[in-house]
Amino acid sequence: TLTRVAERASAGWIEAWLANPRAYRGNAKMPVVLHDPQDRRDLAAFLGDLRGQGYAAAGSDVIDVTTLPPLSDARRAEAQLLYETIGC
Image (cartoon, rainbow, N blue to C red; front, side, top):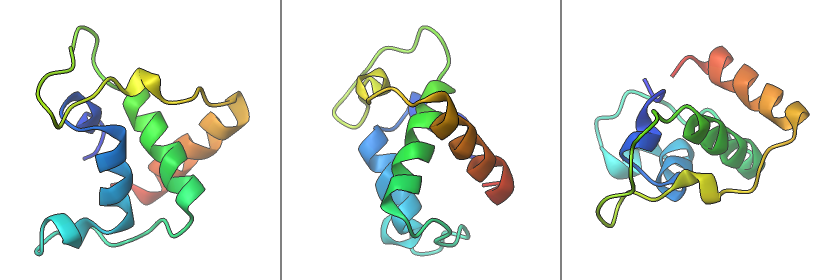
């Protein structure tokens, strides 16, 4: 699942993965399900919020996803619904 992806990947990577999982791993089973860039940004921000406590940014491929702009409660609810509906 993508639930803990923010512990090991940047928000930009999450967005790119959501846009085209097979660009990173040719045999990825996850289909492209979010065609709207705003939906991908919202979901990346939501997933970033699920990051475990105490994880520090480490290495060049991990950033502090708290630097993303905050989501409104309405956008957060939409992103959570997308996440739960897609089930990835």
